[in-house]
Image 1: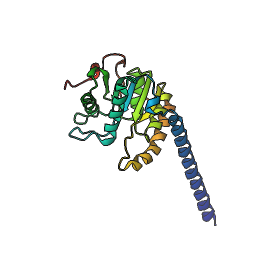
Image 2: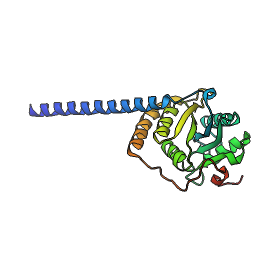
Image 3: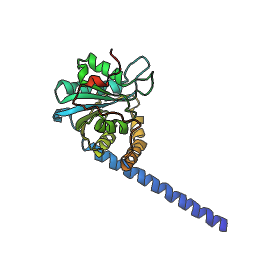
Image 4: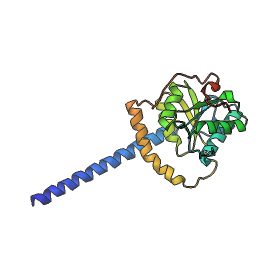
Length: 225
């Protein structure tokens, strides 16, 4: 009898813990989502900003940008051509010798006509939090438009604005991507991580010397091609 009661209490406690955890995760997700979503605008609404901060994504071993990344760079270049941004800041993973997101993004933008001196590279944008932190504190960006897909924008904007960056977002979705549903699901734990990082004042993996976005972007280039 005592054993039954003990097991019953244990099951109730476990159920309460699980319910509480789900409630916290749901609350954080809603908070982060709506805090960022309200700052998403249409391209025609955008007024002059210092920079378009373009978040990196997968690049194949032969240097091909994935479909999402192609659309992010294209969208940013369109804003640059329309003189809605002064500079482009490409931020992504270049922490390994044989994996480089940012230089391939740069080459793509150069092929679309953007001059090298206006394309800044952040080689240590290993995740969204690092990218936003470094945009504000290393590149000293004060006003920005964040360019990525719609599923990603609320979290990116929540982080950016929490870190003191005056940011709005423009969605780079030019069509519906295969398997995009998985990215929406991945946002659930990612928003919780973002909330924790912001709440604890986490620092990115790498910082380094200040490189003002108002200067010549070629100071951030590690390759001459």
